[in-house]
Length: 175
Length: 100
Image (cartoon, rainbow over all chains, first blue to last red; front, top):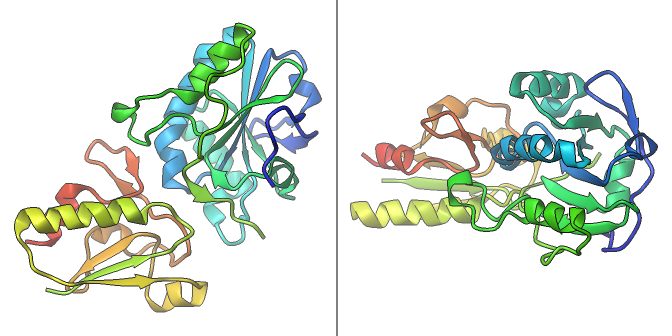
């Protein structure tokens, strides 16, 4: 079951492609924490990952931290192995942390179903936005920038006007 | 002309691809039956050499030959736009070319 709005972010401690472990506590200094259920192989993720990098870069100096998490079974989808995650992060120049949830525990705790699927947590680490990055996989046809709008609202002390949208993408590849 | 439309319901790409195919067929005035087949197991994916959803073949030839030989899997298939950006569905041009 997907984490409900207002619920606290689950604790985690996961290896990142940067060689460091990243825990919920390690993001304690962030004004806003964005967790994105993600992966390598999915064309829907690939269509949006450039925009996610742009969001991470654009909002970094406002205290927003972005961590993409892949929980996919690398046995059925070898393109999603940790080594392939490291390679893709380097090749694409990701500006966000990219973490490997091999036990799939974070995906289960979030109740994530799709990649990409966004969870935005405020300063108290309560869920304030859940769903899509924006409303169109084609970046030339985007009408609503859901993630950016949610971040702007939270950073100004407001609740996002739109707090839930359907995440469109591949399914999480469970073991 | 035989058109096969193979898809896996776990990937959300097939409705858009189906709509695109219908548009291209209509625009070109092609009268053809589209044989739809849902792929539901890895075994089926291997039997059908299904590299991901959706896969469209015209007279047995994949509309994107470059991607046709990828590992068979229940997954979303990646296509590429002319500018190199990834897409979950083939381009209109790929479909037009396949229907020539």
